[in-house]
Length: 148
Image (cartoon, rainbow, N blue to C red; front, side):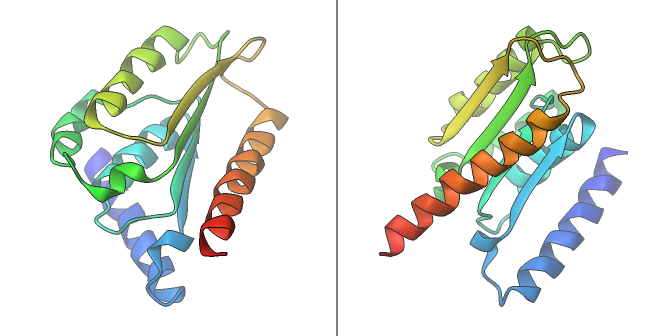
């Protein structure tokens, strides 16, 4: 059940934010496949401005459209979101994923990058770790430059 899983992840996020002295911008969320779908849903619903979201082989869940609409003109729309899908994925096709990400663009996410990579299916292997590291390098470099 998405609601139960969402609540569980929200509680984990709250605990992590408390552990970091209340600085939600130091907390990042991500997921792969169903975890990406759940993660995107939680990321949009989370009232704290998390540092960003990095997902792999997922899509925006239509059942969460109402939560996305409530974000209109919200400062959280500037948070970085990166999603990688395999162009050869037959479980989450790039067409399905790309169409769902259009909802994020329409909602006003300003720092959104969704891409597919040729030769990758649903199990992206080492590319997942590389994607996450590149995301963190980019986001953390941006935050370091902004604070300098």
